[in-house]
Length: 360
Image 1 (tube, rainbow, N blue to C red):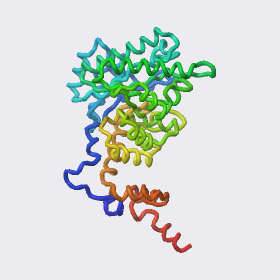
Image 2: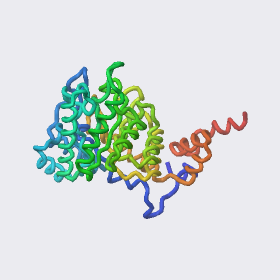
Image 3: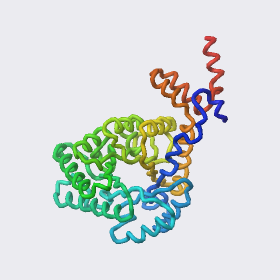
């Protein structure tokens, strides 16, 4: 479909004008996403891949320039040289390290919020180790998902004390190396029935209380929608209150569970608004896939997500921003619906129905 068929909402971008091409070199992949996955019913849906194979599979995906590593799964203090070799061989940039505070039994009753002071100290120590690893390989950010912090039953937790412990621990990690960003990733549930922190507002409050410039927030699209957030609004909130969006994880779900599906497979229109607000707020970080393709080939599923993101960026790059801003300013639901329909399907889509409506 030609741009002119989409009416006043699409325009040609002048040469040199900065659009969503700004993100073309900022797409990354969590290394394990291109491998195989397991769940509580099936230990393996595919074969295991070596570290070298995982890097090669990421390298094979067009437009991907960065990679995220999970601490003690992919990177340790003992294999820094090996990781540097894979990064150089594949031409990939280390984007983030995710410390493992969730995959071992010792974290079962919390990491930063455990009632055991020794476990809390270990959570901080593990994070500092990953900060050191990040500095060693030139990685600018730790994406901190405290998966086991939270509770399952009533009268099981001291909601005030545990938040204080969490803030104290993360603050210690931030102060340890101010050159490395610590980005807290929230989620409402799983593996705990109720997780800390659970939504963008609770996380922002915690980050403000921690009070370090290098502390911010990771938005995971599926975590946010499971918390019943509009991700575009969450992005705007983090911009307004301190410019605290440090990192993004992209996937999709049906809002009931963190399904980690292919990008855009459910929230196609929501992704359009999300990318619009990324541009409007001047986000300059990386956009990373975070998927669990249980029954699909991991590499192919991630590649499809990247192609969806590329399509969204291409569409938004051609938007007539002035007209879009006028639609937002009007607050008119019919105008916003018409805009989206014409952007997606062209001016002629639904024309017959519009004409019939005029006759009624």
